Length: 267
Image (cartoon, rainbow, N blue to C red; front, side):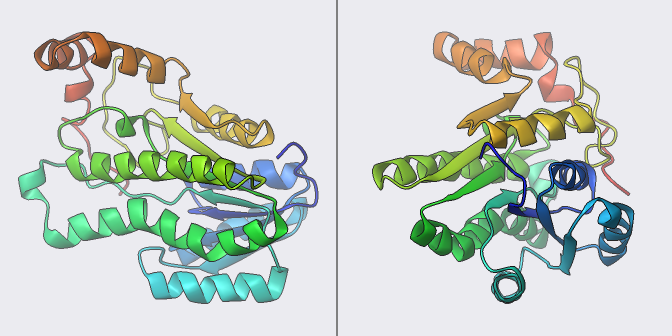
């Protein structure tokens, strides 16, 4: 979507991390911004901080709850009409071996990371199809490209997002609809969500990452990894290496399989 001025943008998880930064960047581009977030104090603080930049409205929504999604969609529809850009950004991570996950942790991770983007998109896509315009940006992860210990459920959720999001893009193309879909796959971002992660590959800075995502929307990019070489490097190595060799390269040379050993997460 080349011009964001006067467009209505909905960002889930828009009151913290890169979601909050994207909220500011969209307001600076003179877009009207709606944010959904589960943290009411963060919502209040974000709105108070950015209200001088333009029109911003927040809704307290638990995106793991499909009924809350439906109710929030109706409120947005009644108050704003149609949205032009949907950014499915909300996400969580547990960060421990699979056998140590509780059933509720597994369910919550899949509900927030994998199911919510589908449910939210389902609510707003009908209007985009009828108007034959819109942009959906799904924040996945570079974890959607490769396995990683202590992240098995998170990885499963992000593999789901990558597969669903890009399939949706192709569906829009087959239907000759002017609804663009962008899949974003960033590496670890220094927002607190992955506190304690140690990495040989530089951890991403939130400001630069958020700006890359907004520019990807403006340029109607189909798929973006951050940093840009991650996709090609991963797919190339997976295509030429045996699984044992790939595990050695990723685990020992790049050190990816050890990145979560000291993970604490956001407190």
